[in-house]
Image 1 (cartoon, rainbow, N blue to C red):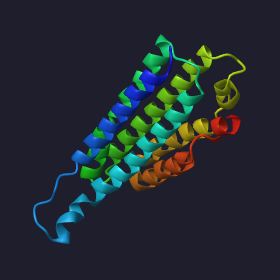
Image 2: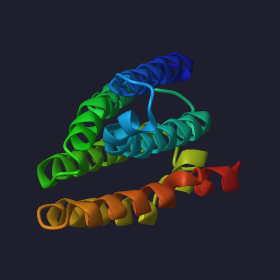
Image 3: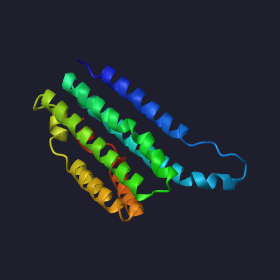
Length: 189
């Protein structure tokens, strides 16, 4: 099976997720700049989540440009990833509405961790479907950046219970690490 349909479906789901997130920011009543102050935490949460979704979209695109095809396991692994990403609007809104309280920040980190694990599972399923000499195998057999990200997410979740804003800094650092698309695939192309 070709990758085109899976890519198109995933692109559509990610576009909807981003749209839902922005719609969570309610338009304030009033025209003064002071009416925007309560929206600052929600906007900052949105920005962080927007970057994460952009990172997933970008790396997903690169991954499927390198993949030779998909099978049923890959389709289900991709749906698993989309499920965790679809929870971004909820955790983004909850975190922003509650001014980065420890519980919403911890749940945000848990969703980031589960999305990362789902992406690793997707890569694993693709690797199982590919020839050992394929671009994907050469590029993604080892995943130090992904493993380091998992460690940071787990640390961020633990720290969030005491210092939620430090956890946000950790989540931001992970986003910066991934902001540049997966170089391992681009080098092999």
